[in-house]
Length: 507
Ligand SMILES: [Cu+2]
Image (cartoon, rainbow, N blue to C red; front, side):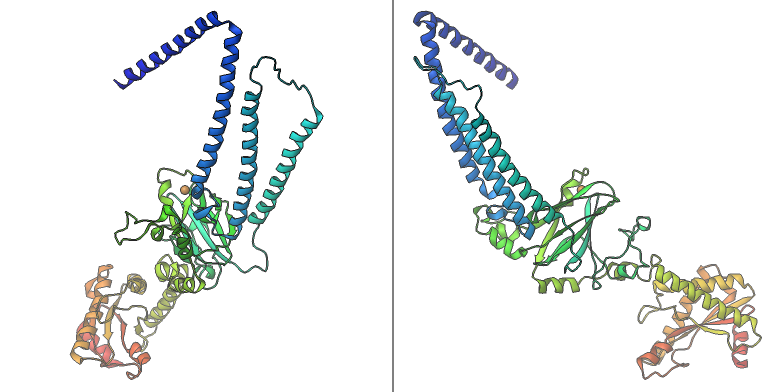
């Protein structure tokens, strides 16, 4: 239906145009061709003049009306040092192009009007004039030179890296489909080494944990920076091209997989000051419909980090908040962040430092255990399991206990003629009966772990001693800690209660 109506409208319009043309033909025949032409051209000339006035006034008025949306004006003022120079360049370019726009459009329409057909008037024909050529080549050349040289100067300034003596903070932004991972250097102020081959589910950026600089590095999702402090952002990507874009700071740099880029800038406004500056403009006044606390629009706006590269379907979801704080507030925020290594890696199988320790402990354990079965005496048959620990007050083994427990399993599997008595001990704080029970449960938990690991039940026994057999002074915390322990008694032959008692007695 709509198509039909549109089609009919077009047909009617064409019909009208044809009819007008026929009327004009008829008029020509009646009035004489030349007279009609002159009148038409005069009307066109005046029409063009009118159009020029309306057009230039309208473009100027709309630019003025939308000035709050133009970079560098009103609420769109830059929030970084170098951003001000970009805005100045933009303003100069706008001034020059606007002047050229006014002049050329004025000339275009004015001359169409001035040289309209009039009886007795003849247009001026200018085939060549050196002065005119010089003016309209020379002036743009000079203006362009100023713009280009000014732009180049600003570009070199903005793109330059930090100097050797500069005080600055270095952070890292890694783009991937579809998020940003920000990395802060932590207390040492240095970002650690990375290797893409180390990237895993637990190691998002491929940080090399053998590099001590990595151990205090902090990973966060949003950008938080102190005001008036120079920042160098290392920019990189894990999969495809992304683009690190901070519109409020005039920062924009491609994030390229395998080819790190950087951007150096200094924020000049805190988020608070920036919001305050927005509050002066009507666009940001009034209640924010998305906020249920009744906040004004300017109070809920945030500076942002976006991806300015069309990097895939979820591209839009890469927007992150940028928060600029006073140095003092930033320091508080920074101190409250925990290093990724400490909170996610340390003491796990992803931690090469810890795994190296585990290896050393295993060697030491095997040395002591093998020594115990090699010597005829039973004096050295009790090994303290330093790395088997429990949750406070319970018989639940901690995750990190598995390494030494597995060492015991390995040892018992290699030495099949050996049995194990697990002995639990507590310190002397608290109720004696409760301590007794806890020590029994803990020894039992270790025994059960070994049994679950494939060691035959008849080779395993467990016994709890409560606080009966302290090895250190129970009046100090250090002593109590040493007394809370599990021991591994290596017994030749499968253990049984009488045999164990006998071995005990012979000690
Ligand atoms: Cu992206």
